[in-house]
Image (tube, rainbow, N blue to C red; front, side, top):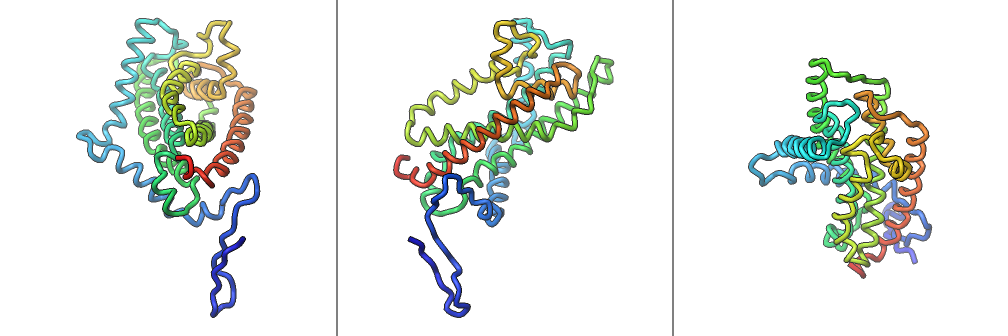
Length: 288
């Protein structure tokens, strides 16, 4: 049944509330109308992350630097894993740059319903505003990491390191787009499941760390043992990491087929996640 609010002066309906009936009913108009809320979420995420910390935004630099040093010691030193002739700090920073963005967006999206239950239960707005704002706000952190990567890149380039930048560096925005929506779509599916099966939340942190080792973050695809090569290649994130390194450093491989495969997986997972998300958001308050 439709509920309508009629303006007696204009003699026309001003508000119409109706149930969702279609399988895929995305309120794109609502996303645009609530753009101010989107900007507010983005601002909140940027300001409050390190608001009550001593070093504040410097953690955006400290975290990747310390992680890079640890990777150099463990994977480059103790394990002796090849970096395809690329300086270790530059190679690991390239992996951290992409992985941190994926991991942050995924974790935010995978906890949407539980973390925002109080807000979702009191007021209506398009729920996709929250994960989309997470994608946007974390671009700031990504930009800082990218600047740090470029500084390290220029240092080694001036020192005469064998680094070859390709025109495919122009694909960088597309690669980030793919990483962002891979992370969001997978996270939304997990979030929909955890509203009913809370024990799955205990597996998320472990699972995402395990998935990192199935992605060429700390090793090049060329260093993968032959028996695992095909398995690692099936990871939709693999061609993205390889293309990024190929674009900036000349290592890795540019696999257009792999990028096409990753994009198809992205479209399928994004469609599936939005369908599941739109269905769960109707009655998730009954289970959360």
